Image (cartoon, rainbow, N blue to C red; front, top):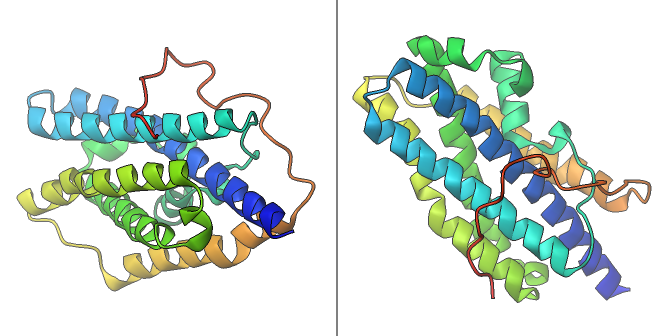
Length: 224
C-alpha cells in the first residue's frame, strides 16, 4: 500500500512539473519573439532569455524521459495546475494564450509587471525544489532527485534577466500584494489542487506528449 501511495504521489508531482516546464518554455518563446522585435540590439537580455528557454525545455525533456522509463504518459493536467498561468490570469486578467505579448513587451509599464511575475514564479520554483530535495518520497527516486538537483542549479539564472531589467530601468521590486498572490497560488496548488488530483481516480492520462508537434527535441542532460 505504501508503495502504491508513493508511486501515485510521484506520478502527480511529475505530471504537474512536466506541464509547468512545457508551459514555461512555450510562453517564453512568445516573450523572446516580442523582445527581439522591440529591442533587437539588446543582445544581453535576449541571450539571457534564450538560456532560460533552453533550460525550461531541457527540464521538460528530463521529466518526459522519467515518464518514458516507466512506460507511461503524464496525467492530463491543464492550466489549473500552472503557477504562471494563474499568476498571469490574476495580474493581467487574461489567460496566457489570450495575452497580447507584443503589446505587453512594447509597454514598459506592462513589461515591468510581467518581469515581476516571472521573477516571483522562478523564485517560488527554487524554494519548492529545495523542499522537494528533502522530501522522503522524492529521495527514494534517484533519477527524480537528479532532475531536481539540476533544476535547483539552473533556477537562479532564470529570474536574473527579469530582475536585472527592473533594476536597470529604475523599476520597483514586487510589492507585498504581489508576493501575497504568489503565496496564494502556491498554497492553492499545494493544499487543494494537488490533493484533489492525488485522490481523484478518474483523472486520465495524456494521449500524447505535449511537444509532439514541435521540432526535434534538444537532447536532455543525463539523469543517471
